Structure formats: structure tokens, C-alpha cells
Length: 187
Image (cartoon, rainbow, N blue to C red; front, side, top):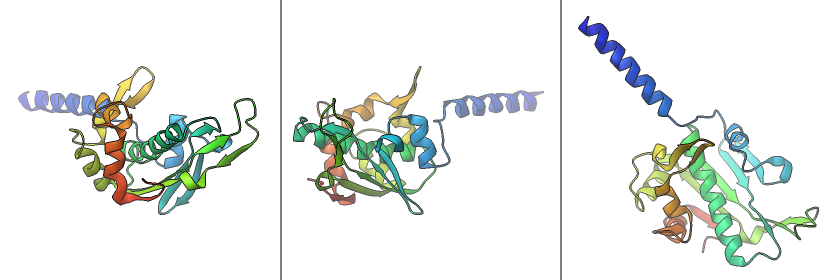
């Protein structure tokens, strides 16, 4: 009887732990579509290679946006790609190119261009990405960067502290920790 109770308790514990696990996807394309923040139809997502995995994310901007806004939004797109990939897939390495997509205006979204001179490319392994993050905030795994909400998974408050420029330590510290893995407009 004691063995049966122990086995049932362990099954319940493993089921509870399994229920807490982050959503996992078989591919980057599946993850991007499920998350819904980027898409091929509006030119904000392009799969560049399946092996090795490489893709482009393009945060929309407008000609009237300041360089600072474009810079931070572009870095957030790069970080989004890397850290969502490692949180929601089993991939061991990824290359993410973030290249701003600029529309002439909100009224004229037919005309757009990619800002190639502002593109950044991050190439990291799972281990490198976690170590870079751990140098800034206290996390044990990629599970720690997400919080379950009624709308799905969002960045955890700790991760938001490196994802936004008005937080501490802030995105500037995060981008500095990424410079060794970055090519392009890394500043």
C-alpha cells in the first residue's frame, strides 16, 4: 500500500510539473505562428534556413520614428527570437537576424523597405544564451523567463528587467552581453 501511495504521489507530482512546463513547438515556424507576433504575410518573419536554424524577424517602424525607437525595437526583436526559440523549442543553437521594416506612413503601408544598415544578427547556442542572461539576472533555466497568464505565456518580470530600456539592468546591459554573438549594427 505504501508503495502504491508513493507511486501515485510521484505520478501526481510529475503531472503537476508537466502541467507547469512551457509550451513546446517542433519548429521555429510553428512557434512563430503560435505566438502570433510576427508573420510571413506582413514581411515580419522569414525562415532563412532549417539546418542550421536561421530566421529573420522585422519589427515594423515608420519613417517618422526616431532612430532610438527603431534601435530598441530591433534589438527586442532579436532577443525575442533567440529567447523564445530556446524557451519554446528544443533547439540547441539559433541564428536570428533582426532587420527593421520601415513603412512610409500609417496611411501608406503599401510602400515599405527593410533597413539593412540597422540589421543585427545574433548566433548563439542554448548554453551561451542562458549564460549571457544569467550574467544579468537570477534565472536557472529558460522556464524562468516566462510567466503563464490568461493569454498564454508572457515574459517574466525578471526578464522584462533586461528587455526594456527603462528597467534595471535594462536592455542596454543585455545588448552589451550579446556583443560577442552579434554581427551587423550591434553598437
